[in-house]
Length: 87
Ligand SMILES: [Zn+2]
Image (cartoon, rainbow, N blue to C red; front, side, top):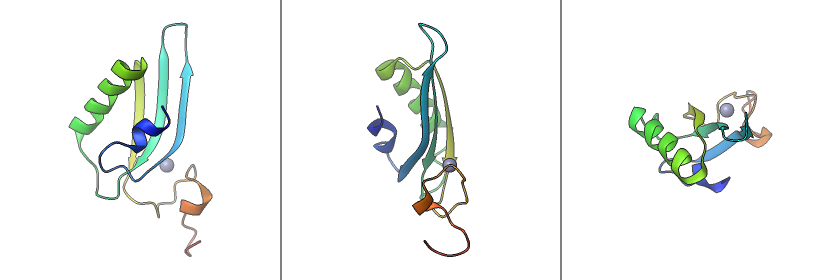
């Protein structure tokens, strides 16, 4: 499961990936995907949500798109964070 979003076209890095159950039948996922090539558009989001549902039984997914590993996302691994100088 952890490798699925990282293998999607254009995805350079995944962080803050969480999966949990809200009931015996409802699974929820949130993740941040870094796509250096830019935002892939709604079709990518719909396709990803469909795949997560069909392949992994995740009925509710929320994906945040980031376009740069140099962003200041506080949830990114430290080595990807940018604090005014390159780490
Ligand atoms: Zn992030």
